Image (cartoon, rainbow, N blue to C red; front, top):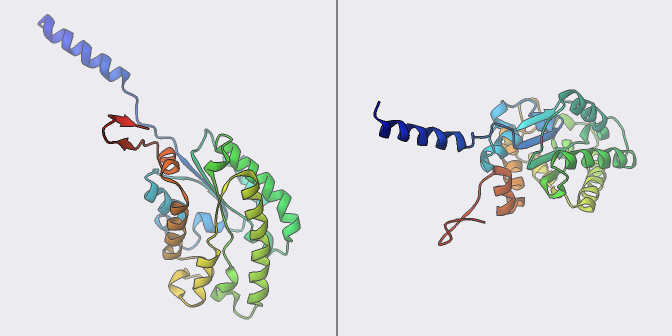
Length: 235
């Protein structure tokens, strides 16, 4: 083979060796319960999946199960043993603590500890964590015959706790509870089981969370850098 061709092949091989392989590591960790795992909707309709599509994050890593309390989520995380650092972490937990008769006072220390754990998964960056408020299940057909006002008041108390803890440490807070209450008039926002959100409602949540992120935070989560005209690079 001519030496010129061999030299060209060597240059190409060296260039390929320097090229970084695309990362397949999840960039988004979603922690929660039935609302995060998307009970009664297809996987594509889950709010973490819809949010990941909006932000071009690839497939999210989800640690969530229907019925989980804060303590059960803790144990679920232990079992899943997620690895690495995630530019974006969402945390939505507490409805089952309320549903089982727990108090907002007992919820506070458990939630605060869980939030610290979520921040750890975000590499210690509180701004990489989005706390999502608990939706009001009292607005669903499942609550028919129950004291809807009392349920809503209890949810508000729990949300006052998670909002306070999120803002205290510098995490983001997205209040989707008003969206959940639209289900009183719009049943298209509720899944077929009469309790959990539909894909349409999850889409509204994903939109609200995406709006809460700054352009820089979106870039950090996706790994993209915004091109600045005239500079030849990003910032």
